[in-house]
Length: 365
Image (cartoon, rainbow, N blue to C red; front, side, top):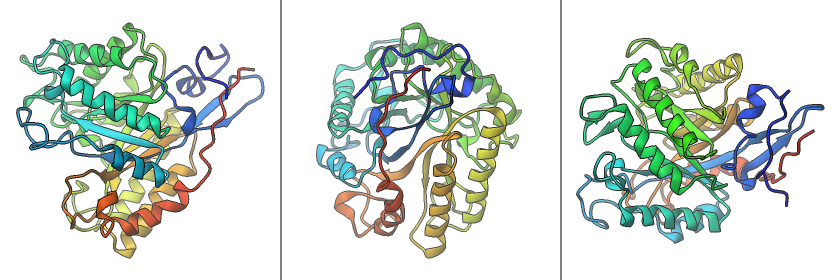
């Protein structure tokens, strides 16, 4: 099958076409293609993923296997058999880079690389997710002890390891919060520049502040809103998408065992879709999930349907979550060895997961 490597965008292609064309980070296992005459092909990804939690658990100094865990090959194999074509892999910045501006820890990096290899063996994309909320050892990026340059250095080092891996996407940061949108934009742009400076063309997912909620995208929690500020993202190769999260419980956090805000969650996804279309951007729903009540499952399907029906605006989604260490009574979890939990949610997602996973490379015109 043809490879995306070596293709360049046609000069007449619009920004939206270029975003997913100029990259070696897109797996052919997760592509669907639409072509406009006289322009470069528009690669529309259909990532149908799941978060595999565990490596972000515990505190930075906890021993491996006691405080935190990476997914087993068996879990990844099983999720692939469920036809998820991507995993979002949360991990802690401090474990991977124990000292700011220092080298990456070989042992921790090897665990990430093994997970990537196991996913690659199943033709799955991996989204790398430093799960740190725009913090390092509790201090916010841009503070005196965690300067923006240190965040850029981290991504320079990690980006170099996986540069131009066709099946690795860089998620800049999980859920920044209590940082003004303008300050977060500065950090995101610095990281993007650092990634591109070392020659990595991988697709990058850029979150907003305010926990990167779709429902809060246009609200002013910390200075101006994400909707007004994040249009200032500067990517030298114009190959990024905005990542948002959306839960449906009382405060949209995903912590409560209810879906009292399911209508609001569906509305938030629709509103964010409109913002993406109006501004010629693309988005990725990096976390979402519901409990198994009928109204929750209906809303879950509605959110996924909005994304699937708007492939120019959305590159896909990743359900929360899977992982070995969840309790058996966790209401949202889809984990192979806990199949009494998550069955209804998996059944709800299955029709979309069963849709063809188109694998046609783009061709320039």
